[in-house]
Image 1 (cartoon, one colour):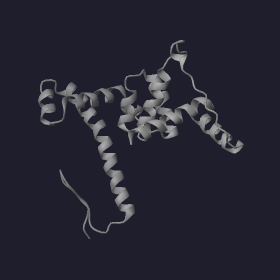
Image 2: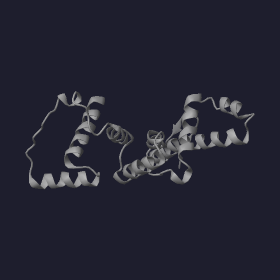
Image 3: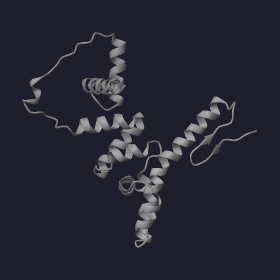
Image 4: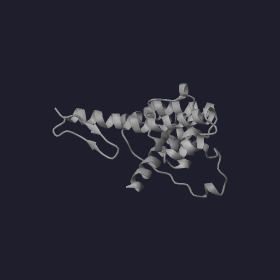
Length: 186
């Protein structure tokens, strides 16, 4: 029986593998790719401390972009290993790296509990950072949308909003923003 073989530029998959095996391989590849950013960040942090005179040369030998490596190290420094969430990607953490630790924990908890994508997390953080009270000039344009729905549907939406720690109106706005962003990307 042929096995899956990985080379630097190729992944050889045997003919006739099952869907389950194909999905398992994809998951393993995702985990390796996502983990490599953490691994490189930790490697850089260690090297800078242990080998200050040789650090720069070692970094150059990786042939990776210097700014990318700096970003990996910066995010890894901002999240000590015990604070890293295995259920969230490196990119989730990178979105929050510039925030104070308490805010990072708040957003990591929500993203993990509610299974948010990195893009949805970004949109929620951005929305939360907007001033609560906007100036009169910004309020010049307002729009009221009325939707007639069954009581069951309204209860379901209210429950989803509560799960997201939002009121129904705020939740509806965030869902519409998310849908608009997804539609405009396509």
